[in-house]
Length: 93
Image (cartoon, rainbow, N blue to C red; front, side, top):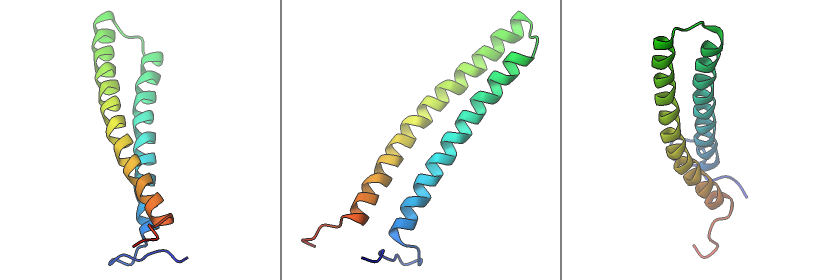
């Protein structure tokens, strides 16, 4: 069974792979941002005021990451559903 072609020449499978790859890249970027902040926190000798501000910024970054994770979960679910459709098309159609 060949892969279906879209108007732009990319197969549906290619498009699904692109979405999944984009989700993975975003996951890595979010993890890198949090890791960078924690490395700074470990290395720097921060005053109590600086530590409080840094902790608040880190908490905001983590909250943003959680929001992005929820969106990425929906995007990934859609991509996996599309992958299932591409690989197991309805034989009645």
